[in-house]
Length: 314
Image (tube, rainbow, N blue to C red; front, side):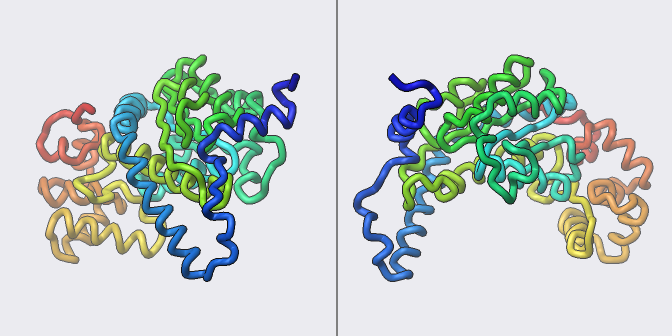
């Protein structure tokens, strides 16, 4: 009989996972011309969006629940190991410059800590206790959301994070690439994007990683749309921290208002470079302080501030 930590037991588990399946038809891939291998990979990648599309209702339900909590001050926390953890860290790190969020508002936890982003930390993914400690370090509460990310859907760090967060009353999402996963079962919202066996057996940084990134993009981006971080498809909360983003800020104001360069520069100067506020000063013909007040009253939703109504729900 094998113990839960016995290598034979783990091997038996892996052999049941779609993401770990061996594809004999690709056994001679290393003998193919480079262009043929590239075509194979490209064909594999093309199947990922269809797999994601089958999970869209569940993804949308999770987003609505996340946005409701974040509107009340909650955080979005990703937790994963290896590639899954790195993808969570990546998505979280891109929210401040894109949506002007506080760095503590969207957080990526990776098994083994920040160093594991660039260097493998042996054994970290096998520790549910480590996940609990990492979440306790963030003082997770019922208003937060924790998204466990794991291609296999069985990674102890991701499953442990979801179980611990749920025990604390937080909203939980389990994102995996295998059906009937322990991760999805442990979460309030289970999202299982089954992309099938990989081109290289078990290399889940490929299709599974692509699927995870697509879903994480949806979770963060559409949540921010729901929170009023955009105006139409314009990133009106973008943080202009470099010359490229300053140029983008001016372009966004131009697209939203049709104003000329001189008026745009005046508006941005009057609002300390805040794009959303600058747009409001132009479209509503108000000064900077008034724009700030109107946006505060509308919960940061530019459309509501322009119409004089309350922030939209859901």
